Length: 88
Image 1 (spheres, rainbow, N blue to C red):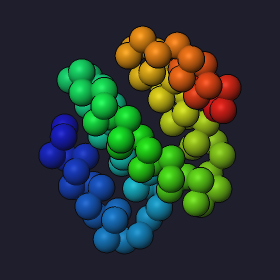
Image 2 (tube, rainbow, N blue to C red):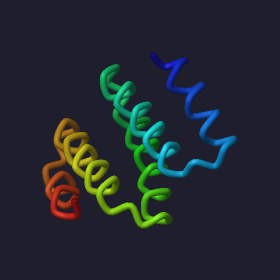
Image 3 (spheres, rainbow, N blue to C red):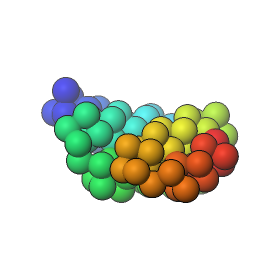
Image 4 (cartoon, helix red, strand yellow):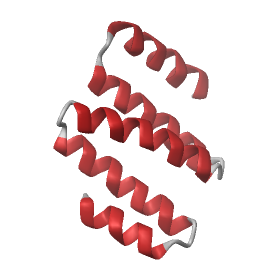
């Protein structure tokens, strides 16, 4: 799955499809969460957030921030989790 997500992300980067790029980053982050690489997943989510803010995609941003809240919760950082959920 990782190779396919990276390939799709590369194509969307070449085409400049911002919303699809953010989705690609989100998909990659989920894979890293599944393999317990939470710090990497958070870095990838930050890239998706930056894009979604730039293109003013509030719905997409809400979904990503909710996922980030789950990630923080998994790390045991309840304060950051609640903050992310409130922003979503």
